[in-house]
Length: 299
Ligand SMILES: O=C(O)CCC(=O)C(=O)O
Image 1 (cartoon, rainbow, N blue to C red):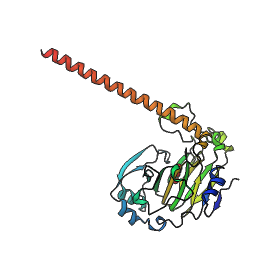
Image 2: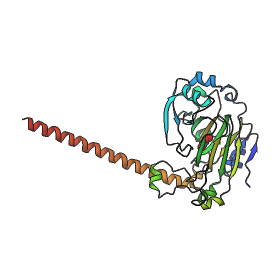
Image 3: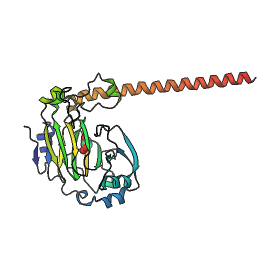
Image 4: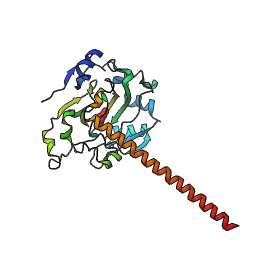
């Protein structure tokens, strides 16, 4: 059975050498213990800071999991009320971008948590806050960048699969154009809350790795590591996607396939907008022709 190392914290050299370069996940139990947000992010504080902000919250699909394809706009204070009340509504705030253009944490939050010392700042692509009620389930997927996930409140259970298990967790294949158009390029086809072994027999060969984190723990996940995440309590988490090894890890599966799918998705999007643009031109011409005919018939 694979066990994820648990260490208190790591220097930048040790992190890059022992974990990032070797593509191994690790839990750091003390790296974020001094972050002010660990103590200061009460509901009142968050409401006061962000209450009137308009935020996009994710909605679950029919299988009860978050696939990050349906969202609604709402006010932060309404959302917070709905996820912290005794019968919370299932929704998930996950897309509140925290980073400025050059990888620095947005000024409004910079005092609440510093970027961990071992994360090379120039390699950070984006950061998010994740706030949800107990019971959030994120569909089994991988990301194309390395990931640091830091718990601020609550408890989350992760089921991980190494990139070497990719074929056993059934990603959508590159030739599945529909999945590409639907933005499922990072997802597995397996419903982890109700696995269909008849359809996905190779999943029996996969090697799940179980990790649970609570504040102030932080999990490092290398790009391409599959993860299914269950919020076991109302939770607040901060994460950063970054790429410490330049693009070396891009050549490894499943990240390479993901990048191919992204190129295809961009191509299809362009085709679609080209289609829309030519439809617009056609409509404009048809309108002008109609005007021309109307003008002539008035003469
Ligand atoms: O915490 C979650 O529910 C999902 C987190 C995740 O998938 C990620 O950070 O990539």
